Amino acid sequence: MIPEIFALAGQLPVRRLGYGTAQLTGPGYWGPRGEARDAVAVLRRAVERGVTLIDTADNYGPSVAEELVAEALYPYPAGLVIATKGGVVRTGPDAWHIEGRPERLRAMCEASLRRLRLDTIDLYQLHRLDPDVPMAEQLGALDELRREGKIRHLGLDSVTSEQLEAARELTDIASVQNRYNLTDRASEPLLKLCEAHGIAFLPWFPLGNGSLTRDRAGSTDIATAHGVPADTGAAHGVSADIATAHGVSPGQIALAWLLHRSPVLCPTPGTGSLAHLEENLDAVAVRLGAEDRSRLDALS
Image (tube, rainbow, N blue to C red; front, top):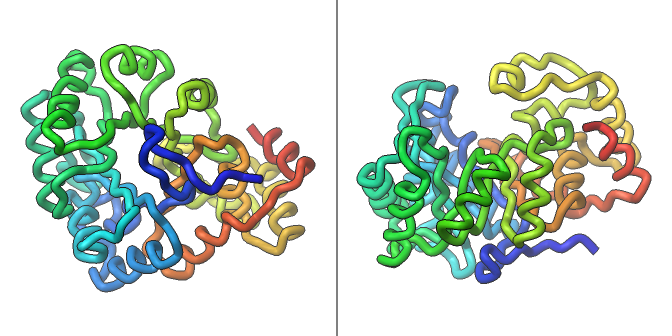
């Protein structure tokens, strides 16, 4: 049986297939994507379908995604875990810089608390480690916020295995977020480390920024523009064949593979479409056989 639940830090149980909010913002993660009522409808439907992990960030918009989460879901139902991120300042579409000074991290966290209408953020993730600020100072600032009750658990985004090990020497780490999907497994060593320590791995671009949802190989402009390796025709062919055999979409196969791949993988695919949301969440019902998994595993 595939475990449907993962306990963040051994304490907060969440359904492993969550929802990410980046696609509620406009091109380059700048401004709103469309009408607020549409985003609100998607967020509410995600929770109606049983999603218990909402992943957002202060720089999506910026501020737009967090405000939409609060508008749609506050007061939050019991058991809903809100994860957000800080440490990146967005200055325009696809334009951003890293900011890890302790005083700035504190200001970002407190601003997120206000926008989300929370007293405590369940999972606060450092969006990027600032190479110009010692790790101990960055994590120390977040640990101080945790001691004050403003953060429950800490996570890291886009780190190496060595950085995770160094961070664990300084404080408890509940999660990591790195790019990882069916055809992009550069973070496989980090995944193994997370398994060894019971750390949640929230893969970003779990659908290859849309490249893994196509039936066959096609344009890779969107994927390569975001640093995602271009998919091969063979990979698309295998995924499409397995999808056809199961009567589902290639995107559902990509998500199902993640859920089968490791019990610590907690994908949070994002979309602004109700139809795509339903499709993504239906992936939990897809059961891949040993031969399916073997063929998909070989696509790396």
